[in-house]
Image (cartoon, rainbow, N blue to C red; front, side, top):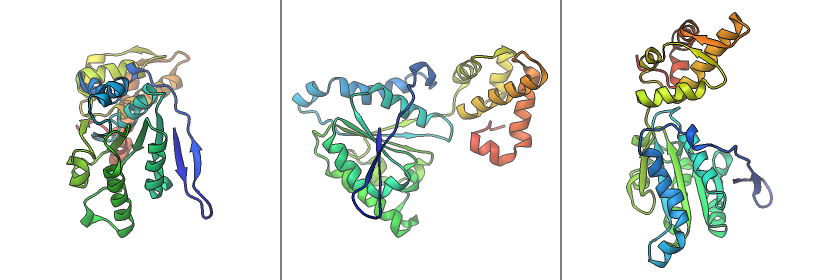
Amino acid sequence: MISLEGRQFGPPKVRFHELPGIERDRIVLPDGVLERVERHTVGFSRHAERLRAAGRHLRRGLLFHGPPGTGKTLTAMYVVACMPERTTLLLTGPALGLVEQSVKLARMLEPSLVVLEDVDLVAEERTEQSTGTNAVLFELLNQMDGLADDADVIFLLTTNRPDLLEPALASRPGRIDQAIEIPLPDAACRRRLLELYAQGLTLDADLDRLVERTQGASGAFIRELLRKAALFAADESEELVVRDQQLDEALHDLVVEGGKLTESLLGGPSA
């Protein structure tokens, strides 16, 4: 994974990034969602030559959308890890001003993957944008349109606010041809997340009750809930045994003491 960083003089600087390996069982999504993601990324890559020979275009775009904390970034990191033969270019922060150079580099290094997180920050409705932001949006759209059909380049975009996205980016085939919702976890997913983030702890609690109490919570909130409960347990005993009492204290600390902002930032439960 690489990104470009502009300099006042001379060509952009290339930065290299190392990502941790993401195991498939750490991606907790409703049935069928991860399979759709894999089919549109890893599946295309696996059969690239056969598809190209059959006249199928390889250029494609995915949009991960959903509330904050649901796992869009983690799913994107998993996709990157699944395709080590593919160069990944990260468009974020200062690199957003280097869209043309980044996509040109992606063409040179194909097969490649271009990741742009929180695309709503640069791709809102044009009437709501400043001139500088418009320039980034126009350049992104032009570069996506300018790729040849046989270019083996994947665009992977994430957003918390699909309703704000420029319609041309969100719906026109060839720019984005697969929108995948990464939703808040349902009861089955919340149970899996609680078990996942409780690894290393002794969880002596009513799991059914906790699944019910975390309805509407994001994966990020559940992870922080278990971390906070482990801290309360450590304060009370040498053994890290997390019981209903510590979980209740952690939930109170996050939802009540933390206030609306903390609850919003972590994707807290709806009730």
